[in-house]
Image 1: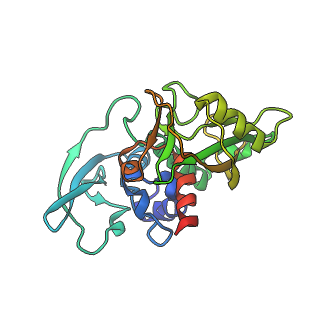
Image 2 (image 1 turned 180 degrees about the horizontal axis):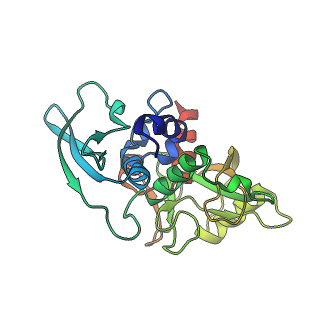
Length: 263
């Protein structure tokens, strides 16, 4: 069995904005890759090494900022792969053993699944990249308003990829379509909206569904200045509320890239 120190480089190479808890996404950057990674990381470490999950509170100047997770190994020692994420003045207090919930996670389930896939693939224990065939092509749309709000849709609980999380309008690129055509079509089908779209980002991402060796992501951006019809599955989320939304990993990656272009 690997030790914590032997596991560390696999996690370091696997962390990204798409495995970060959305609560910390705005402060994640390559110079601090462990930022916001504690929850998914603790779960994957438990998968690999066993033991318990431990949760403490993060305080700054006496105000609670959030929670921090780490591991208590079967031999009773504590292991915290993300302890280096904290900024000056941020202090972790307490530490209570928490039982892992049964069934799917209530938040960050996609981040956990993606991190687990990357770590195991890095360890040589399987990965979709070995499957034959062509990547699945996906087109998504980051539609924003002048105040920075983002149009999000709630993915179905039984969706094959990133179920139950908030994502961007989009879907598969159909045969004979270009990604740009697919983005326009998906936006209209899912929201009834049309907008002038521009290419934003292209990325080759893991396919966790088992259907293809990878996902070829095509992200497009556009702006809206009119009202958006909202319902239980779609809403325009203000920028300052995004940290509290259970964003899908793909959405987090696209929004992180979009923010880096604006700063």
